Amino acid sequence: MKQMVILAGGRGSRMGGLLGTLPKPLAPVGGKPLLRHQLELGLRHGFTEAVLLTGHGGETLESALGPVEGLRLRYVREERPLGTAGALMQALPVLAERFLVLYGDTLLEVDLERMWTHHQRAGADLTLFLHPNDHPQDSDLVEVDEEDRVVAFHAPPHPPERLVPNLANAALYVVERRMLQGIEAEGADLARNLFPRLLARGAKLVGYRSPEYIKDMGTPERYARVQADHASGRPQRCSLEAPRPAVLLDRDGTLNRHVGYVRRPEELELLEGVGAALRRLNQAGLRTALVTNQPVVARGECTEQELRRIHSRLELLLGRQGAYLDRLYWCPHHPDGGFPGERPELKRVCDCRKPATGLIERATRELCLEPGDSWMVGDTTVDVRTARQAGVRSVLLRTGEAGSDARFPDRPDFVFLSLAEAVEFILVGHAALRARLEPLARDIPPGAWVGVGGLAHAGKSTTASVLREVLRARGRAASIVSLDNWIRSVGQRREDGLADNFDYEAIEDALGRLRRGERVDMPWYERATRTRREAGESLRLEPGEVLIIEGVPALDVPWLQPHLALKLYVEAPEPERLTRFIRDRSWRGQDETTARALYASREDGEHPRVRATRARADVVLGVGG
Image (cartoon, rainbow, N blue to C red; front, side, top):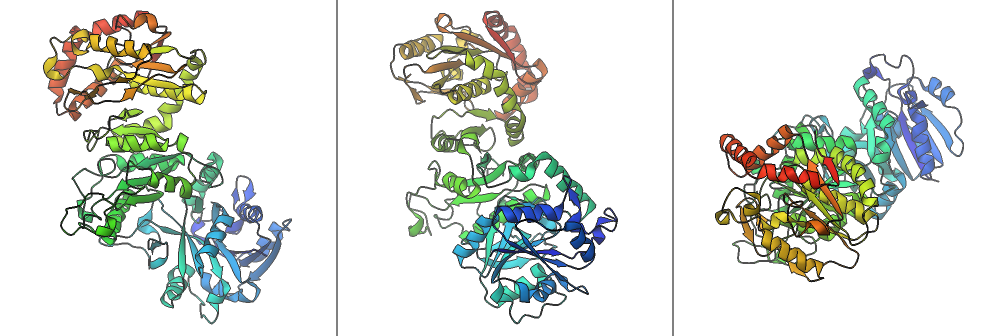
């Protein structure tokens, strides 16, 4: 027998009369009493008995609920307020040897069987469901060690100097009955009184960390939020029963300012807009996880305990902005030696240090992720290579190192100036652009070449990446060649003209060799230094592989035009494109006046020639606006 215990005796005084005389567990959610949702969840996960601990409104609750097929219902009513721990102790004679405890004012969509199994495997006396939330400052937080064993409880308020992880007690537990024998608990609270007492007695308390949906609805504001979540399907989107998309994030230079190695909590400061961007992902139901190399541990410059404090500060700063990360994964290893105080046991090649994919593989298992529909966001080519090897989409940000590490020549799938810009595309722009490209992809034959041209900052590279994604989803092999690879280094340009900035002769030579089936080692243009390097990606086309050639001169290079089966001209509203141009120049260190002057010179130089290629296009695709 699997038994669930529901604490259903609250008076609902915080609901401000919203429910009248109706007990909180009977509050309607989606046209059904909350308690009915809980009991049906228990049935789905193999529970056969429910013990309802009632108090205020107990008779109303019993008569309104009625029988539940497949589930034995038992009621234990408190005659006077006993507190949550006291109510549980009063019911001790009818409790099973192992039972689940939940509160009657929470809506949840949790794999209860998975949590039950986690408790058994851990050999725990008590398992607590823990998750990050968007208001850690007023939450009961639980501190765990690397093996998820509870080491401390932290009740609010939390002073700024107390750096603890954002792991909130969500009021869902698996309990061994033996642990409650001989405890006096009348008037006590489970989380704030009984559990710390059990921990002090040496009981084995274990955390079960999960991104699944569980929210209390004990106030009018929270009740409204839960109803909205249920109506939008958010509880199901958070479920672990099916793989879900995620956004995996690098740390330094992506979430916080890049200051070299962060060795102390006070050195970590969020980048502008990061909290709001993460909050959008949280609200959309996408899982979020930190995936970061932290060689400072192996170098002996920071202990694991201090790194946890650094990450607690990260979570604190995000929480103040209503945002959170579902999980934080980090690699402590570093293969190189020679640092004072280094730790020999951590100086090794591992499978978790990016660009190895061990951390992403762990996140995929623990958070039930769908890699092919997920995103890796970072500021280095290491992050881009990691994404490629893990089979997730790569996003390179123009923050932090902005790709200037140049360790790998891998082309990112997408490039954005900030996390906020990337999140807007992930949540809105990607699906919209994909829907527009689907009809075009249906008509592209195997082995075709597609040109994607247009003015700078119009969205060409983004369009090319999504088109490749659509083609691959249809079972077509597809690759991209970016003509930006053949931009001349700044000192080698003769005039401000299209054919002078791009090396047309080298473009024609490389594409001709690809056409003949040869392997081509392409150059790589580094935007930050405006320099062309000769160590870029290598490509050889397989039979039937579609080649997407994107860049400003894609519809202008003379040799290329007869070979293009489809010509796309991508354009964006001029004010939006100008804004992108100025922001890009600002990232390169240029002031706005200089950037505007350069833009004006291009209006007189290369822009008319590029706009003239619009007439050659088979399709004009508006992006943005």
